[in-house]
Length: 211
Image (cartoon, rainbow, N blue to C red; front, side, top):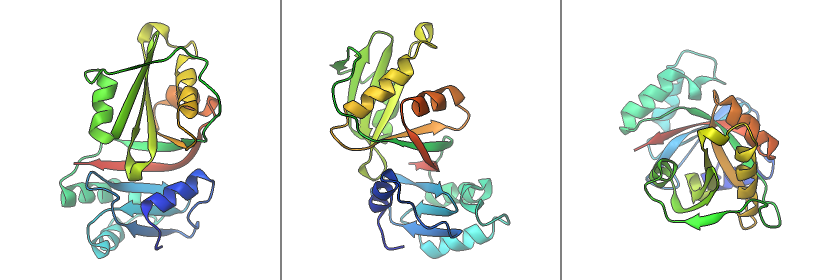
């Protein structure tokens, strides 16, 4: 596969995925910050500046089904040791198409670099923007391969009222006409349901390696 990581993600946002051929593509990192693995249906993409031959030899040594090898703990541990990076979790990668109009929520753009959700976003994203509403925070920034990524935080005392769903839906209206991406822990069922209810589609799993 000669495409760049950006090309692959832009195609996936349109519903066009790598061939389900059981193969693994190795592409260069889009930036020094981001390395990792994206596993689509029966096709994985490893984005790294490491030697592709090392990747393929290490995958062969995982001693598991080829379709699962890139997300196997043995491969990810070797990948982290090789690169000196760490990984928090394996996420469900979701994407939402842009929506027209203005968000129905009352949102105020703020500058709050100390907010925990903002601190986390600044480690992983560029061009971070933050909006607040009563009981919640919405963050947009450019992450892996320059894609527009969303993160939200809802206060404990206003959960279970649909605010999370409303915030991630608002992100699609604030996107300026481009897709919005979300990385959601597979075990965070509440968040997964909120994103799906807001029209986001699961497209892959992702393990992001952080420097």
